[in-house]
Length: 249
Image (cartoon, rainbow, N blue to C red):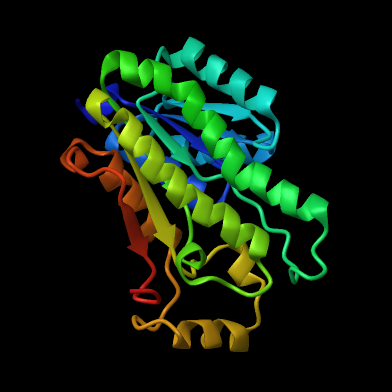
């Protein structure tokens, strides 16, 4: 299928990795649904796409709180009404509520699991019927290197991201016979608003742990997503693609 015929639905699309995924997929010719809680930031991404030469009709910004089931259902409905189908789902929405497990509040545990894991499951549930009916689809879950190696002070986040890997493998088994692939991308330390807030010393300490000696860029992750969403990746499913500079091997 040519990229021009594909529609991608990206959660957490207003910034960081989600924004980069949107820019990369639109540059290939795909249409993109931009979903997140912040309409102003979504509109900014849509405007950026237009400035880069993308047509107005290539993007659809939709306000969606990933922690709210009805928001997810309504956003997918709106996307289907507008574009008629969803070929690619990128589950990228995520939050952190860090703290040692001994003192972690239940609401911080629930918030992270709901947004990072349950929302991905609900999005998959909403888009799968159409993918199965058309016998074509790509689902890509953005997990994390900490899901594989652990991280102190992030029991909720690590659990949610490890759960995404399990979800990826389980759904991949269920829908493979319908030509729908389900994969995950596991970024390492990436240059985002979160890492920009760190001191120079802290950033250098992070980089020193990475064999490639630098933090990754959001577009490093976006290009991995683009590959898994492509026709060329049609024989890959249930896989976790590490984009971490060698931090975890």
